[in-house]
Amino acid sequence: MGYVTQEYDMQDSETRRRVFWLLKRLTSYSLWAKKRDAWEVFSRAFENAVRTWPKNDPERMDADLLPGIYETLSLYKKGVEELGKGHRFVWRTGQPLDAAMDKSSTVRNFLYTHPDYWERGAQTAPYPEKVEALNRLLLASRYEGDYAPIEVPFIPRMSARYSSPAALLDPDRYRYQFYQLPYPVFPAEISEVPAATDLIIGSGQRVPIDGIWEPVKVEREKAFGIVPLGVRSIESNGCFNYLVSDTKAPNVRGQWNEAESRTESLNTHWRLLWEDTRYKDGVILDESEYFLERAPIHVPTDHGQPEEEIEVRTGEVCPVTGTWEATDFDNHCIEASQGMVMPDVLASAVGSGERRVHWVTWRLIRRA
Image 1 (tube, rainbow, N blue to C red):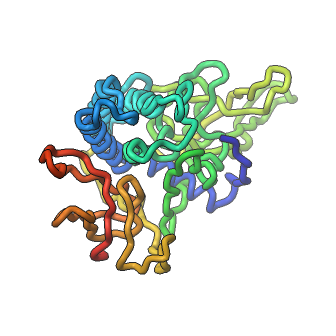
Image 2 (tube, rainbow, N blue to C red):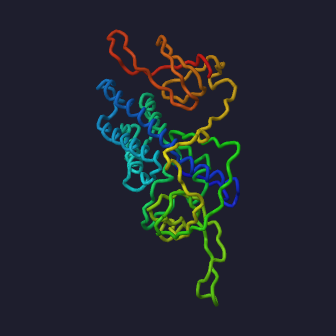
Image 3 (cartoon, rainbow, N blue to C red):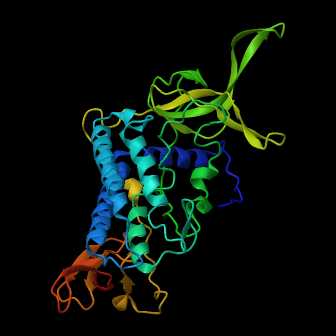
C-alpha cells in the first residue's frame, strides 16, 4: 500500500512526546499480554472451525495451520512470561517474541488460500463472512508498530525500524486495503521526553542497555581541520527507536539511490534517552493509559437505529461497552467492551442437537 508521507518534525516537542509515548506503549507488558490473549482467542476459534465446519464447506479452514497457530501461542506465553520479569531478550532474533511475530505473520498470510481471495501469500479480495470473522479475531492480536522492539539484523541495506515519526503517527499507516488497525488514543497530557544521557554508541556497536535511543549527529572539534578532538555539538538525526541490549545498533535510512533503485543505509550515532527497567522487580504498574478509549459519540448508528436498538454481527467491532444479547438464542448474553470483536455462539443446532458455531446478531440491551 502506498503512502503520501505526512511531515512530522522530530524537533517539535509534541511530536517527540508522542513518539516516545508510543514506543513505551509498544514495548509494554500490557500490550504484549493483550497480543497473547487475543491470539489465544483466535486459536480456539480456529480449532473449533476446523472441527465443526462441514467438510464440503468451500470456506473450510486448513487444519494444517493448527500446529503453527498453537506453536505461536506457546511462544507468546513463554515470551510474555519472561517480559513480565523484565527480560527483554525475548525480542532478539530467534527468541520467543521474535519467533511468535514471524510465525503469526505466516498464519496471517496463509489464513485462507482460496484462489478467489488469495494469491502468493497476499489477500486479494474481501473474505467471505465466516472467514472474515476469524480474520478479525486474528487481527485483534495486531498493533501498528508492534515490531518496534524486534531486533533488526545488522546486515547491508537494513536500517532502524523508524527513520521518520510518520511511521508511528500518520493515521494512514494504520489503514490497509482490507482492514484497519485502531489508532491509539493519546492521554490528554503526555509526559515530557527525559533529558538525554551521555551514553552514545555508533552503528554496529553493541547496545549496552534496553531502552529508547535517538539517532544523533556528532560534530567534533578538529585541530587544523584534520585531527578529531572533543565533541562540539550533538543534534537529532531522525526518529527515536527502541533498541534491545546485546544487539547491534542499526544504521539509519539515507537517500534514495537512483542508480541502484534502493534506499541507502547510513551509519549514525545513537544516544540513550531512556533506560527501560520496567518489571525487573516483578511489579507491573498500571498501564491503562496505553489503552484509552475514544469518548462515545451519541448520534444515531449507520443504520439509523436509536441507541437502544444497536445491533452488530459476529466479527464486527463492538461500538458500545455494555451487555449484549444474541438474537434467536434465549438467555445468551455477554459483556463486551467498545472496540472488541464480537464473538460467535457455540450452541446446539436445531434438530440434530449437535453443538456448532453460530454467527449471530448481537443486540445492545444495557450500556455499561
